[in-house]
Length: 339
Image (cartoon, rainbow, N blue to C red; front, side, top):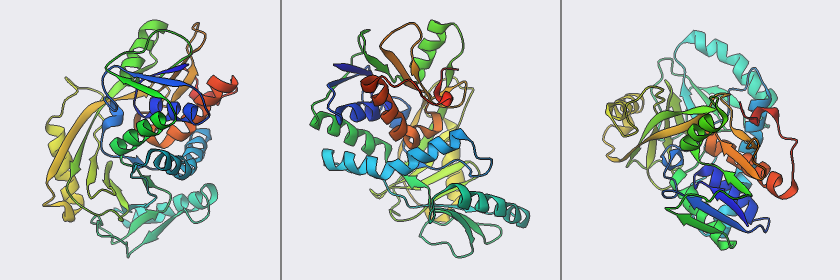
């Protein structure tokens, strides 16, 4: 029996990767499924900028390209939707100088991304959710996808159970091996203490869910804000990134998100707010996800630090975690080492 601590995206995706290979899996979640940072709204599976290509960007791209098959299988086994769709993305172009500089980014996307999934400038963007653009130009890409975080977690949980796995909510994992520790921000704090160095921290994020249906529209990214239309007739807006905070509950910055989103996309002007989320997203000091053995604890592995790319990198992290636990794989990318 392999234990997984944490029922966020890293924990459930890894448990699914183990269960689909026939392993006996038991997931322990101290609170409830998606209680941490994975329980937000946004679900923007956006690639890193294609210029200045490096191993981190290549690994994230590998995971994003694996996502369609990964989530299709989860949906097939669970019988539940995940909201996955590669709908693309629109970004307004602020000025002519920016438009000229984007030529290098478009060329880099053509070099580093698969054919047909690149970037281009357009003056005729498609879709009902188009942000205002000062230049009348938009950068569009066909690589960016979306996922409904809460629906995806529910589908993963159902798929794990369908393959004979267990999920126990309201109970921390026992300290036995083998265990994969995917416990988010609290887990990073535990590692800081256990290893007597700073492994990572929590960064507060807030997001909104609006009642606005644009299920086939590309998502929008502008001024650091993601606006993501979901397949279920809602639209997510987020998120803040707060290194300093007094609590992990919603506050006035959530109101600011709504003001900014409506200014960017007037189509959202009358959309009611259905839900406000706030929580602490786990960011490793290395700014890359961590997938590594727990030092001096044989049989204990760490999967943490997803921060802003947790859902996008999850298919790759899950596959590698399963290989570590079932095949004793140790030749992992240096990127994922403990900082």
